[in-house]
Image (cartoon, rainbow, N blue to C red; front, side, top):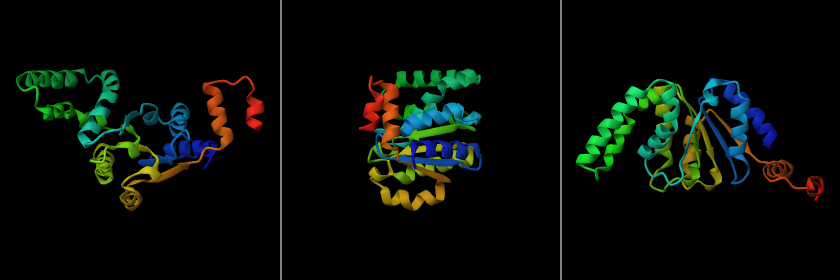
Length: 210
């Protein structure tokens, strides 16, 4: 599906609240992130406009993923008046780290407010194919199911499905978790227009026709 068609389809899918988990797949460099940024600006869905994004690049545990999401939500939590919760968690974390700084599990304290932080959020999980080998697809999908069922979240997965190491597992579980999937296949003309907008060429028409 071309960039233009994907954009229209994704806007329509996001506008339907019944679509809780959406997958946007495509090869590297096809403009998936560019497409999402455009859709985020143009959608009328308030949740999507306030979406928080987390990359799975190098992430080896679900805890790491949750911490990335928590970091992304921090500015929004200030606006939502959750300063007291964050301050309390931060204070406990500092005291305990002072007693035992090598205790890595203390980072879990940052997750104490996660149920409140995640409630009703739109979460974008990017770079799924670049996750650490220790983190399995079924763990990720279990986390997604928890977010949707327990916290009423909506999820957008951005991935290159052809490069997933756990491709067979993804294919088996996708039907149970993903409500809608869009595969982006950017046309050469669309790719040129994106590049032209980023780094203008003095002879765009000549290159476009080449």
